[in-house]
Structure formats: structure tokens, C-alpha cells
Length: 501
Image (tube, rainbow, N blue to C red):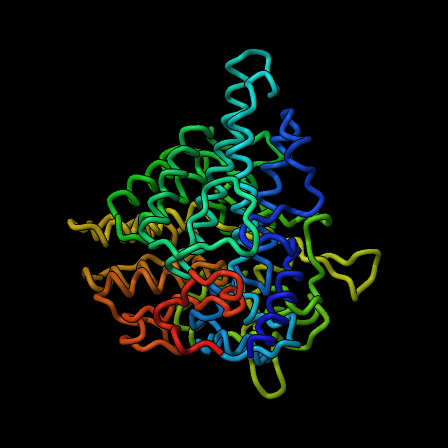
């Protein structure tokens, strides 16, 4: 058994482009050594850009962003891939063969890619802080300081974003803030989630201090953090920890900034092409240099689409038709009319979500189709509905304003307003509206967890978590046993102790 884990460990870490001498602090490939860089504005810019690239790599590893946020949420009824079916069914402790080096369950249990990104953020914080203002572009010391602070703000944002992502997935995780060259023998304990998120909030507040609001003239708008992205992240952290007063305040900062606007009904699908006026923060992958082959097996397109978009007769991840029809009851709703099609799979009719069909042939080669959709993380509709949640969840609820926010979104999407609701049904309406608005956008799982807590600790999952299991924290992922080989202080996620093979 020990030999098996060692083989898995070596293979998995190799696949993640990790150095054999490092565990958490892993440098991105081709990054110059720290001794010869961090001398100029361009060095700082390159260092920060690597943070976003590494986050993209972490999210794309076994389609992690959507596997964590959507596959297990009930949106899908089955997967044709056995291992993704195990993910969907909450069989996260299933044994993984040592030869299954591409196994998505193995990769989804590893938090190594996120620590790769965190290590880069830590280096940016350390080295950029030490650089003199004169190293940065600008015509005055004030301009140069602002430029330096922008890079620092992005580094603090990306670190906070990674820790928030990991806390929602694994709960307690090791908290590493120093710029350290940790070897595989380095020991890290899992810090309490509350401690990690307290640090994330501190980082976000620094980002808010250092960053400006969106620059519409910049080609990097939305795909690099600004003040709006930082406030949106703060709002989500506050909602996750149940600080709905703080969440409401952060949402207001975004909404009242005037930097964002909802798309028109006719242009709803433009959101997924990237950098729309509604978007607040996205992970860039809408250029050929950033995109992936849509026909490659472990990509979102390969799992959720079919012909004519990719070479497949039916999606591998099968949507639950009943969930789709229960959510989209208004036939005029553009989110349904533009975001879904009905296809035939033998004698079965299936819904297919077509939000991510910005796909292009390369050199007229139908076997090589690149998916050019950015990963949309935060957008205005999400924040407005998060504010509605905060208004319902705070100690003195304001259900009327919450419903008004829901109806603002519905009106913009050509859906009829909701009327005649009471306090209980308004809370459910907010959850449902988030489900309609953010379908297959990486939010649904975490919405179900937050609302389950709001509703008294009940499980809202229909596919593998009872209320007792929900209260016991089954929705937090186990860590893969391979990580225990070099770190004896690392412990298994509480619910999964003794359940991971």
C-alpha cells in the first residue's frame, strides 16, 4: 500500500508540473530565478501575471472549477465517466489505482495546484514590497508608488482568492504566508478555516486599499483584479462565514460604483465570451494562447457539449431535465432561451447548456477546436443576488428589498416578476434565482451549502448528502492520501477520516 501511494504521489506531482524538491512552494515553469529578477516594472508585471496563469491551471485541472461548483450540485444527473460519476455521487473516498495518473478524483483531492499559485503570490508580496518606487513606471514618485501598489494589490487579491477557494472546498487548510522554499519534508498543519479566512479578509482589504476601480480602456480589464473584484471577493467571503452585514456593505460598494451594468436581454450570451460590462472578475482563456482543445477529454466543453460544437454525439455530463424545467418556468426567460438547447440521445431528449460554445477550429482542423470562453468568476447579477441573500440572512431581514433585487434581475432577463411571496418563499426565491442566473458558473454547490445553513442546517443536495451528513461536513472534500507521505502533520478532512482508500 505504501509503495502504491508513493507511485501515485510521484506521478501526480509530476503531472502538476511540480519540482521534486518542493511541496507547497512551487515556481511556475520558466520563471527566472528570484536572484536575477524583481528589478523592474516588467518583472513585477510578469510575476503577478503568473499568479493568474497558475490559478487558471488549478481551475482547469480535471475541470475543478466546475466539478466542485456544479457537478455535485444536482444540476447533472449522471456522467458517462466512472470517476466523474463518483464525484457526482459524493463517492470521494473511492480507491484510485496507481496507474490511473489522469484520474480526475485523484487530482480533485489534491490541493497542490492552489499552493503553487499561493507560493507565487507570496513571492510577489515579498519581492515587490522590497523593490524601490523608482523601479516602477511613472512620471512622478506618486505615479510609481501607485504602480507598485497595483501589483501588490493583485498579489494580495490572488492569495486571498486561492485561500477562499480552498476553504470552500476543503475547509481547514495549511496557511502559508512566508516566501519560503519548502522541501517535501516540510511539515504543515491544517489551520482552522476561520483563521485562514480571517487572513484572506485582511489580504482583500489591502487589495481594496491598493487597487483602483476598473479601467475600461485597459485590455486587461476584468481578467486582472481591481477594486471591484476585491469587493466582490470580500462579499463572497462574508457570505460564506455568515457575516451578512459585511456582505451587504461589500455588495453595495460594487453596485454603487457605477463600474458595471447588466447585459441587455439580446446580448446575454456575450457574458461568456469574456470582458462584458457585467463582469467583475474572470480567468482569461479566450485567446489561442490561453485556450484548450475543446475535444480533449478533461475539459468543460468535452464533458458538457456535443455536435456540432465538438466531436461527440451527446454530452458526457448529463443535465437533469427536471432541474432545468423546475428552474426555468418562464418560457420568455432569455437565460433559458439562449442558454439551453434540446438534443436527442437515442430515444432520450436531453437539455444541453450552451453558454460555453465560443469554440473555434484551428487551421480548419475539426479535430482541434479551441474553447475561447473565459471562466466568469464574479459578475454584477451575482453580486445583486448575493445582496438579496444578505438582506434575507441578516439579523433584521429586509425581504421586500431582497425580492425587488430578484425582480430587477428577472426583468432584465425578460422573465415575469415574482409576487405574493412571504419571508420563507422569498428566501427560496433568491436561491432559485441564483440557480437560474448562475447555472453552470461554479456557484451552485456553494449556494446550496450557504442556504442550507440559513435554513437551519438542512441538506439541499438531492444526490448524496443527507441532513446528518450535511451537518457533519460531508461537503468538504477529502485530501488525497498521497499528501500524507511527506507531511505527517497533515490530517484528513474530519468527515472522511477512515473513508478514503
